[in-house]
Image (tube, rainbow, N blue to C red):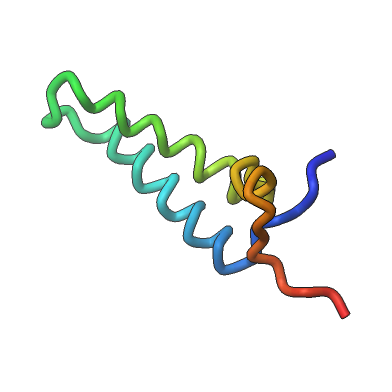
Length: 68
């Protein structure tokens, strides 16, 4: 499918950020009408789960360790 270009540390950070943002969406009503912006947490969560980032592909980047 897609080439893996997200390393382990990067994946962990992305998943944590995604879960925190989505948790903020589901558990906070205090932000008024802008709480829907927290849905952006879906992006880092999915890129962390699937270990591929379309932006990294476009820029030719990778945080995976180099293969020997």
